Amino acid sequence: MKKTLTFSLLAAALFSAGLAQAQIKVGVTVSATGPAASLGIPEKNTFSVMPKTIAGKTVEYIVLDDASDTTTAVKNARKLTAEDKVDIIIGSTVTPNALAMIDVAAETETPIISMAASSRIIEPMDAKRRWVFKTPQNDSHMASAITGHMADTGIKTMAFIGFNDAYGSGWSDEMVKFAALRGLKIVASERFARNDTSVTGQILKIMASNPDAVLIAGSGTPAALPQKTLKERGYKGKIYQTHGVANPDFLRVCGKDCEGTFLPAGPILVASQLPASNPIRKVALDYIGKYEKAFGVGTFSTFGGHAWDSGLLLEKAIPLALKSAQPGTKQFRAALRDAIEKTTDLTVSHGVMNMTPNDHLGFDQRARVMVEVKGGTWKLIGDAK
Figure 1: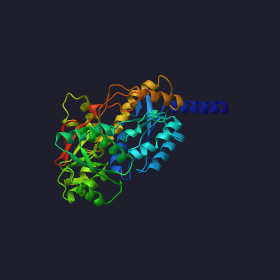
Figure 2: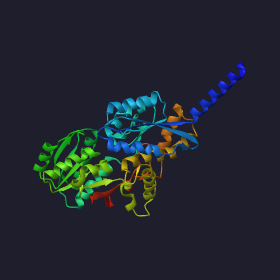
Figure 3: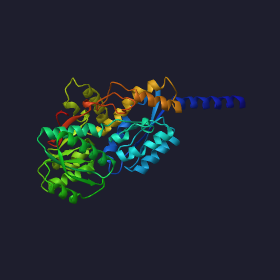
């Protein structure tokens, strides 16, 4: 009897070990609370509708909230790698958090797919960033689109107001570069914090410079504050936002003050308005359908799309990585990194990805469109230049 019991326990242990080896662990850290919550919540929700099996392996998504805080994002990344032994991390939501997590990726040799936008997350390529990929468009993609629209509509001067963190700095750098290329003059440049409750001083300085247009480089609902203040102070020029505001909560908070705003965005934002021949339309609508079935009509956002696209990357890369190693090992993490880097012709909800060792995003012009806020919703006004 004792021998039978011992054998049974041994068999159970071996069976459990086999299950653990067969399971792929995906660690996730999102900003589901704090200033970036309007971005992080749809990302968090998206993981609940992602495939639970890939290439015959069970996939477990371990989702943590970093509360829009850089320190917490790093703690989450360390917990996911040290305690949960994840094979890959997806996150975080905002640029400062994503930048802070790069060291964890390199130290633990764990690939990360970022859902934050700044090109600084993956550029310049080096020994640390080789472990990091991302799904949102680079600032340069969108800065080019904004300045192209400005130039085409007769704008000569512009002012800039952006977050006083890495997101705002990245956008400021890109706008200086692309404004010069388009013959635009930047007549004022101001900053504000994500949790500020007033930007009156900054807006008064901007209005004193009398710009033809103002670009607000913020994300989520905090980006509504400068726009509402501009409207309250009677500004009559054009207002541009970045793709960081492409969600329903921004429209809700900004209200009528959003009307007439221009911004570049991923095609998913206006997926139903894309021509039937556009391959991105089908992928984007598939995600939107799954998300809205779970969370309600009109609830999807481009940020959830960034999470969905990370899942599409995994669906393509995991079968390749499994040819070299099994989950739960250093070898599998390395193989997964290599497989993601070899992604080609992958149509996702925001564009078509063709990655290389020096480009860990792989988007081209198909990943952006120009949009205007009309009647309280997003209207496609054309491809971005």
